[in-house]
Amino acid sequence: MSSTNGKDMASLYHLAPLTPRDDSTVPMARQQGRVLAKVTNYNALRRDIGVKAIGRVMQDMAARLRVAMPDAEVEPVGRDVIEVAFSIAEPAALAQIVVKCRAICGVPIQVDRISCLPKMAIAGACAPADGDSTLLIERAEAALTDAEAAAAPRTRPAGAVEETVVAEVDRALDRGEMVLHYQPKVHIRRQAIDCVEALVRWQHPQRGLVLPGHFIPATERAQRMERLTLWTIAQSIVDQRALRTQGHDVRIFINISGHLLADAEFVRLACACIAAAPDARLGFEVTETSVIRDPDAAITHLREFDRIGVRISIDDYGAGLSSLAYLKQLPACELKIDKLFITQLTSSNRDPLIVRSTIDLAHALDMEVVAEGVETQAALALLSVMGCDMAQGYFISPALALTPLAAFLAAEQHRQATQDVRGSFTRRAAGWKRG
Image 1: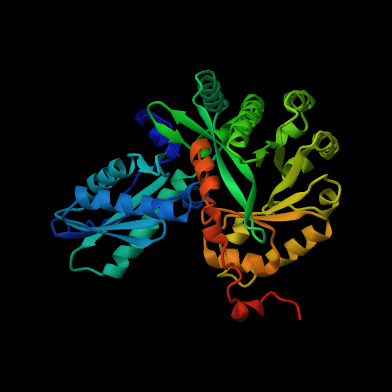
Image 2 (image 1 turned 180 degrees about the vertical axis):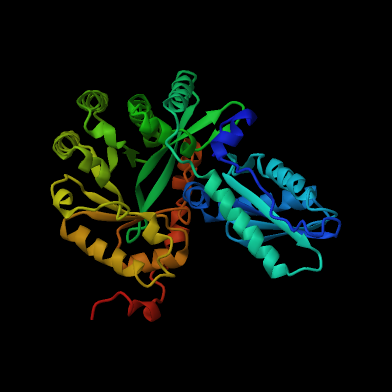
């Protein structure tokens, strides 16, 4: 996601320099060329904006390339790659076309009022027009592989860069530019929404709505999440009260960064903020990895949060080094199965087995199970048959600002998504049901 100016784009998005692969033995012959443009952070974007929105991003990018290069043939050749086929007079023109493609793909794309600027690797090749087209494609793919390798960061960004991001976040908080959006979690059997997850957005006056992928990772690496998290807690309480006046009493879950769990001062301030609002109904989502960093301090502090009524949810379960030794010690009432297992639930043979066994384990530990990343009716139906308690994802609803969330809850729009979820899955059931 972008919230950067043009001069920083090359370093932030790692647009790789291209050394064209050409056949110079026939320099004056008409050349056929291929340029491949790949979104290198496709999976991350899909998680942030959903499968439908990332599809629109790819369509928009292809449409822009077609308009800018009407003599070329522009087609998607995969979910994250667009191919541009063209004819040129000489191999030297290839570099100019690559530069043009970079410029076109380097313009932000607006999707649902969110400004997206995917990270790109762009490369190409050319060969005589009467040559082997298969060889040309192989050369273009090899060039793209080189471009991706050049785009991948070799070292962690300099501390000064992360300090700059943290300073920008602080200024955004001072100016009131940070906002919260909320993604509902629907209880599958009761077809009710009892809780939502708070997700931070940056409403930049020039860049539009910036998603957290641009500023949260750097702020976490700098271990400077305290102020933003305390603001999120306070703002969630304010928004929760506003929803309650409209008849919607939902618990709000907030993501807690790993290093904060071991920070006694943060815990003291967070508890004080919550204690000052006895009507608050909050939950904290934490990862097992964050507990493993300093288990004694993390478990002690989680129990303190539990004592004042904050519900604890284990986030991204299965994505890291899941440990039953820690899981049984945590005062958690909810376990969220990582979207990695949910997005391919109906197309994989192993993922349903993992999901079903995780649901059984969580229920044995007296925890409810949330499946995040639900994007299809089929996945929701299969989760229902497996006994999953709650679902969260774009099929239910994207993250919504406060006013649209209130309208969504009032209209009970989630009921349409959850009706008839126990569709027929007898053909696939044999793959994960026990005998």
